[in-house]
Image: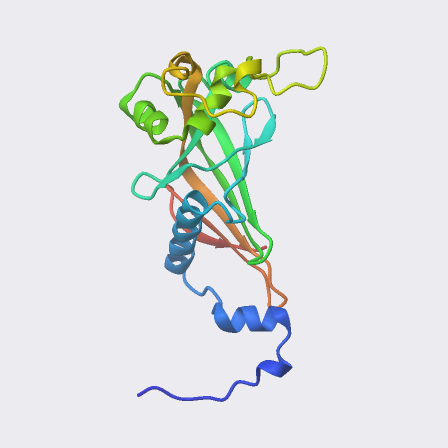
Length: 212
């Protein structure tokens, strides 16, 4: 039997209303599912707060990147990058990395740690290139990231400014395109709440609760 109850929305603060709509996470299985759901939505939704996380490389450098895909089975994040970017040399065939996600409305932070690698001439990289729009591919026609310039510049050739290149014009750009794959080994999940913060570590070595 289901019990009914009356809820007076007028007496709820925004934080209490959020908790009513999103019951307190009380099991590690719920936390693991929440992480998977949030990362899947972040990859597919351009308006998701977690669509553009901070990616940190082993040299302690950090930058905003667009999350292109999240593979739930392998717990792998996919990003796109320029093969000429300095971070590609730092990551190479494998490097320990971290990715920071935060949703200010849900007040949920994900600190992901894992192993990153760069792929260029692989079926996965080919598929990623094929699924990109010509406007997105246009980024790889320009000068290498980090090159010095005499003034403000997009790095694109003059003829490509404000234009969508044709498939033929984009052929040279493919050589500069690469994918960054980060297979997560653990995710530090943190939920901020006036009702009491919650924190958990979900990973290959087991799941466990942590004090905030």
